[in-house]
Image (cartoon, rainbow over all chains, first blue to last red; front, top):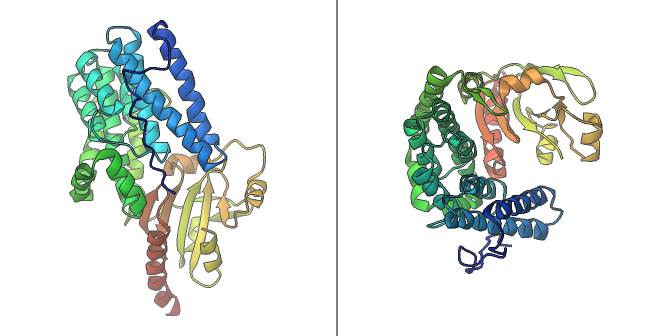
Length: 284
Length: 98
């Protein structure tokens, strides 16, 4: 069964289900509620059909959010709507089977408007945090520009760290989709085959050199800056560089000591002499 | 994953989980029994989480000498995982026979 979702052609700035008599703030509030309900519904969906319907709703909300921002560019709500558009679009990319890409996507339009109208905004770090979870060329270029051009140090620092994290996460995803032809096709549809090919042509060691250098720059120049839910830039960089350097292919696996589900103590090194598949997992 | 646990009995292979849930009303044993998860799993330890910084799922393939040979963050393809494990099991077997 194909999970490719095609939006109705009519969804866009010209046709909005909500009354235009509502203020932008009211419309944004309603769209936020719809997004949260649909996104939670995706997690909790019991059937594939249910999941598909919630995914379609998120896609529709994403289009309505960018339409709201584009119709009211000077309204105080516009900035929040642009950030919410990016958040919704990236959640579709990362958490669903949604596969509609192409030109003038909501994500591309939102990023273009953020760069055009909000580069000086001292709250642009909230956009960096959302866009840091992305994969596209536009997400990367947004973070590069903001890390160089924002007049606010905390925004530049957040952008620098988020750019390092985006590039590292992207490298991990490229390694993964190399093992999953179905996922590779979806990524080509979302982000463009030419872009995927350009990423795949790059030597992994070369890409690693770039993101490691960005992590080090973030810690050196912006280490004291606090990132919501992540501690300081320095703390987050230390965690992630430790993972990149020590938990890499070719390195000895650090020891793990603990108890199993029966309460019996054991160690990872108990299995020396055997091939071990170590699997970090969560349930529910 | 379940088929790998069956393989454990015949070959030098171990499937070891690490649960990253730290807030549970049920014990890990109960959760695994109800979900019919047959592998051995470490219980949550915050120090390990701090050191390994894992998102879920993350898979590490570690060879018989304790060296990390593969790492995948996310749902890796079954064929790629099988191929990686088979290759390392073949490496491990001659060493065991010495």
